[in-house]
Image (cartoon, rainbow, N blue to C red; front, side, top):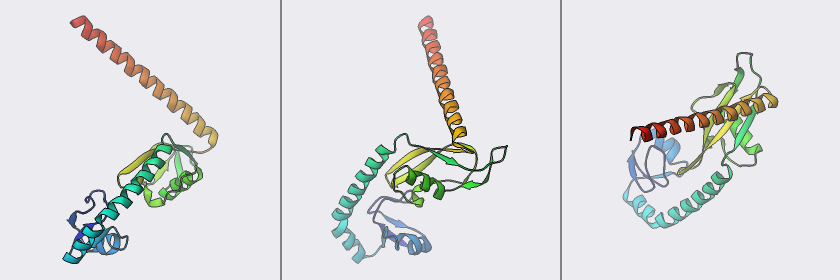
Amino acid sequence: MEVILLERIEKLGQMGDIVKVKPGFARNYLLPQAKALRSNKENLALFEARKVQLEAANLKRREEAEQIAAKMEGLNLVIIRQAAETGQLYGSVTGRDVRDAIREAGYNIERRQVVLDQPLKEIGNYNIRIVLHPDVSRMVGVTVARSAEEAERNAKAAAKAAAKAAAASEAVEAFETTAETASA
């Protein structure tokens, strides 16, 4: 089935593109969510008439999403869960849990905006992508721990490891620079 996209859809196309999709995807997702129109002469004329309004509304939503993304810069969340001594969680951390933690931090997002490839099932630090608009996404740090104290210890250890890695990379650069200077 061919449809006209009313907004950018990841891995499918841009606004105004006429794309061929499976009928079920169009019927069950694109058309009910008002993300596309069936491709025919009447709808093509309707899209051309509404194109300016759609682009203006899309631009406004994108600007709002960019403002929220700027505020979310450097956001790190802590999610407390029970876990075994080996670090395996009793259960898992899902997109809903991440959404709830982000809402507690003061941002209003929906669960479908949280992109988790698979549920988090171990204690640790994760980077999770939050899609605020089809063109705007932000990475958020999530620490899953048994307690707030453990999360603080892990954060300090991660900061220390990052500082050590930065110092090591600077040393390597300095060595390479001196090696280049000596050979020249």
